Image 1 (cartoon, rainbow, N blue to C red):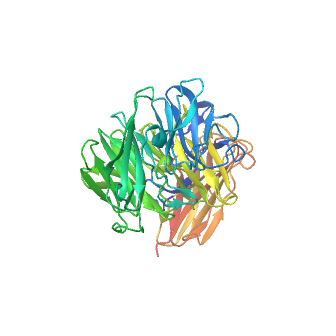
Image 2 (image 1 turned 90 degrees about the vertical axis):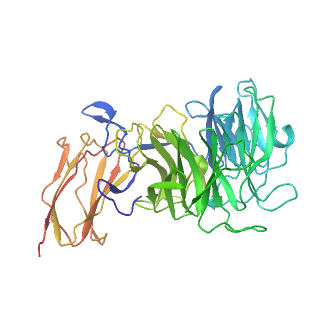
Image 3 (image 1 turned 60 degrees about the vertical axis):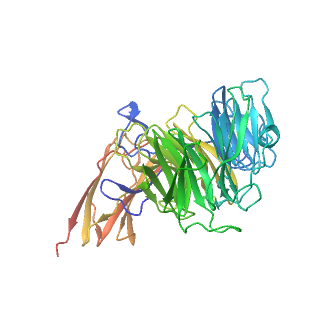
Length: 508
């Protein structure tokens, strides 16, 4: 995840959670600050899903969970995440492609390329699907503008957001001028009572500047925050300033937004409000992703930088307590998709960047996370994903057992002279069990050479050791080094801290 680890940081990790539940001395509980692997479990697979899960939501008046796929099918799950009904889902809006989804007043609202359908009432015995935006409310069709994509996941072009003024807001983008519709980003809304009746709506209540495509909508107090990414090339209008996305703030009652805040990134695609603060994911497609915090005025603070992957769609960002989670993919220490986190659920540790969930590795090409959602009584979200070749889809969660395949790398220690590693002491959270192993590899001189140490397992360390002491080493380097830890097995086997490394240097 990181190019170089700084002070009190590590270099790379995947499937590691310092707040994971573990067992220490036979007592189960949180092991704050430990290096703890996690277990991934696929609850829906390609055999039950024919498309990538794009949106997941629960509802206030039913115990079920709803999944909206990239090809427009709606699936319903039990509260244990087992599929209810047939593989073909329960309903499929006409021409639906998973453009947006939201629960609002006893209905699930579903964006399609040009329309909004709704499914409900959910509290009724037999909910039904209806064409709502065009037929039910007699509105003009939405525009099916081309939005960018990454790894065969297209960023949704009609995200939906229920606001605290009782309205459901709808993002749209008109890519060419017409007589009655302006060219640029549009925000529409609809409003119903709690039973989904007595509906009103407004088309193009807010118009954004040409070239800025709405990708996310969030509440910011009583205002709306609208995140936009620039459309680099389009016909019939100006081209936005190169490499500049934007955040627009609107009080929802004025004719126009009151603040246009430039974001110096070529894309800005996802946003969440956490305790009154806006957090934004921006960057470049297939190159990098940054977590930004809006400070007010025209200022942002960069909290984390990931030099791989892309900013995720709005469907793939979530809040857990004091922690922000989002989907991404990495090339180091392995090629895989997973879920990043910044901060901690408990708030007891200094905020840091982690990847606590490993979802899909390079056994299939171009793995990507398509959605992240908190819907269970769990410290982790459920996560939708897809791969390209061969095309596979799934919905995963973290389990209490399974097969672990986590990786963790220390920061790079720059010595700057000839050195020799003579001893490494590794504390374990618990005695290593039969079938589990931890492999340590020491990389020296910018990975030009490596040394693999004796595997930590029950065969090599049969005496219930909880402190593994490599005390007769002679690993020579001339510039720098780091240590890679690779976990495998079926039990959660964590490392304690500190890991102690003794070195000798050549003073000449």
